[in-house]
Image (tube, rainbow, N blue to C red):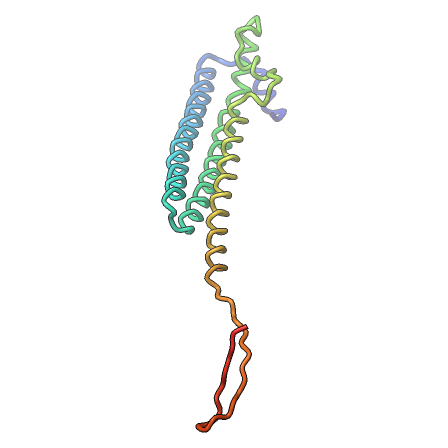
Length: 182
């Protein structure tokens, strides 16, 4: 928060301003939860597809594509979540100021109580981030499984060159080459 923001918050906040701040906060918080729900559903379908592909022994290229798609989903939704969280944070200073201005007790001040929350690991942000990172790691694992399967196929298809010892013998019709594998 800048000094200019602090100066603005020193002025009393009207009910109309509070309503505007609350509507902004509520809208962006709602969008954040909806985006997360969509991520969970989409991830569930993709993860189910990976398990089906594994069960039915699909091409390793399917695993590479699915794994990279999972990683991409995790990154995109993490970025969207960061943006949504940033937008909700814009309204918090005004709502905090309004609570300070109107409430005699911190008991009913939701934003003031949340600001003093000592357990930062117990938050939507932490939970969402853990899930995004977990999905990204799972996606990398799926892609690496596909790559390792391809490399195993390539190595098993390479034929070993057999060394043969050859000798020549001169028969009536010309030189004869006799080779024996070793």
